[in-house]
Image (tube, rainbow, N blue to C red; front, side, top):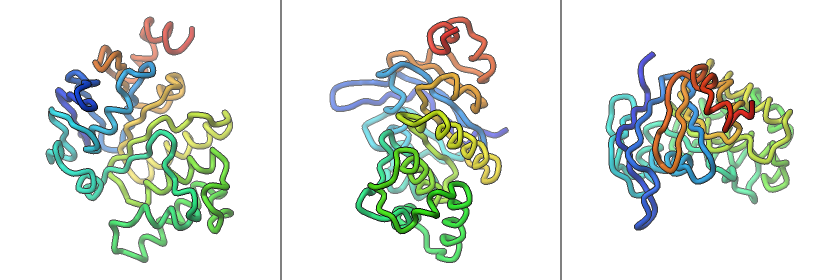
Length: 237
């Protein structure tokens, strides 16, 4: 399978602080790549660097086109959608208004309406709450809305930051089931940051382990799962 995203020797940080020290990884077209690591390892910083949200140097190539150094809005227009930690929903807008905001770069109105209905098919609870203010939704419903809003962009690459955080196990299972369906039906590449390493390795094709801003292990998800150090430190067995 061809690489959709290729990152090489990525350095990034905040102000004078460097968080990432030359990491390299890739995401296959239509594949799921997981970034694992403890808090502070640089996982969220990696997603922000790919989006052009902070200072960085190195190579970031999307579908053969270099996007390093481009403005965030330009990267979004090229099909990169980011679902940040904390979901980032517009709490005073309705569910439907949030979804329409996700399609703000698009002009194909009929297709936008079709994509909204597809999101409602993925997450029927959002359809029931389409006129409801997002701030009144449950945590799980807000995460569903955040993912759906990103899908309204019709992305080629979806960046997900801790989609399971703070959610009940049954809700998490539903979200990850839909994530796999999205990958299969829409051929979207997914870069997944997830604290629950066991869950991430179940759905991912490839995984990379970050420690203090460096990749210390990378490969197929099943191989990472069998690594003794990963099992002991991140999987608990």
